[in-house]
Structure formats: structure tokens, C-alpha cells
Figure 1 (cartoon, one colour):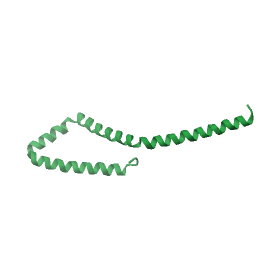
Figure 2 (tube, helix red, strand yellow):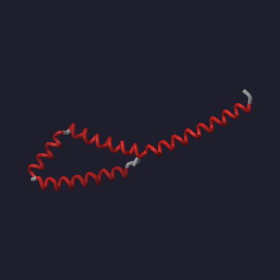
Figure 3 (tube, one colour):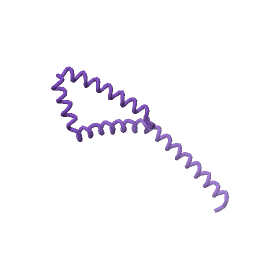
Figure 4 (cartoon, rainbow, N blue to C red):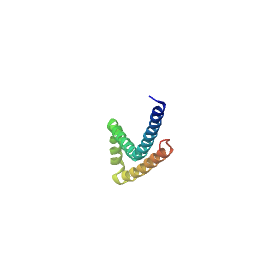
Amino acid sequence: MNNARALELARRHGELKARIDQQRRTLAAQTQPVAQALARGDAALRGVDWLKHHPAAIGAAVAAAVVLKPKRAWTWGRRAFVVWRGWQSLKNRLSPSG
């Protein structure tokens, strides 16, 4: 192989590597929203999984609703949900990936 041919192949190789690198960056940017949506879905599934493994928590919530009367239990449930959502939001803002 002559020197000009080797230089041409090396140049072409460099161009292809740069093109591949750009395509990878573009793909990563385009799939980021999908990755975020999947992460939220995974978090929801972890919550469901936790409830499956801790049925006593559901029993305690039902017992509290019966003892506190439904209206009061609903009020406290909403408060707890607001606090939980605030905690989740704060945790997501402070995490290195979010």
C-alpha cells in the first residue's frame, strides 16, 4: 500500500470516528426524555413493590381511617401526600442526576 492511500484511509477513519461520536451525542440527547420517563415509572413500581412486601402498612392506614373517621383520615392523608411530594421534589433536585 502506498503512502497516499494510507493517509487517505487514516483521514477517512478519523472522519468516520468523528461522525460516530456526533451521532452518539445526538442519540443521548434525544433519548434523555425517554430515560427520565422510564426512571419515574421505575420509581412508581418500587413503591408498588414496597406495598406488596409491607401489607401491614396498608392495614395500619385502613385502621387509622376507621378510628379517625373518614373525613379526618382524608384530611391527614392529603397532608401526608403533600409532604411526601415535597420530599420527592427536594430529593430529585438535590440528586446529582436530576
